[in-house]
Length: 215
Image 1 (tube, rainbow, N blue to C red):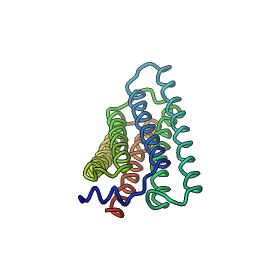
Image 2 (image 1 turned 120 degrees about the horizontal axis):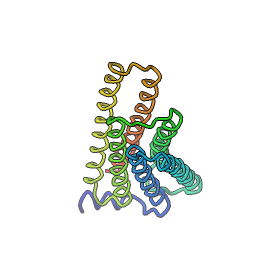
Image 3 (image 1 turned 120 degrees about the vertical axis):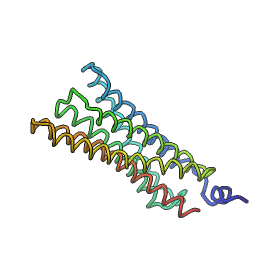
Image 4 (image 1 turned 45 degrees about the horizontal axis):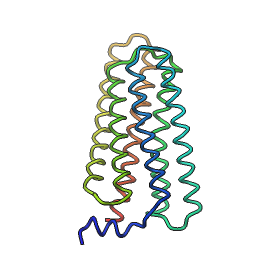
């Protein structure tokens, strides 16, 4: 029997938690895609509608996370450690929270011009969300540990790239932006976007821990 077959056998069949995790990561991908659109549209009404959509999607994510916690309180048998289920649900929710926080900052600070680093950060968040979605979907049946690990490696790479984008963009801001208020506004939005990639990596770390415990 192969390692993957043993891994799949050891994990109890689940029809409650994994569908919720998948709904959560799919929702995250849609949120991230909306943020990219926010950065690329020049239509103010369209941008505001997209930001409102991100907020609505974040609320949906909160509801999914709440469902996970309810299931956790009502079910004795779980597909893996209860703590890991809680950590994973919370980590995915944190990505959505910071993504929505970034959208709210765009409104709060009246950001209408988006820099290339901001757009790059939005793309990186989408990439991280897509890989997180892949990892969760493979985690649900444990058929391909290799694909899970590949997705996790890509998420770590995304976070490293986001760090580099943030560092370079902040250095450029402090060197060239003469308007202190504009500097603060740009810094806040960039930092919030980067934190979304940090939270994506946190979710990847939880999945990595789950795989190690069952491998």
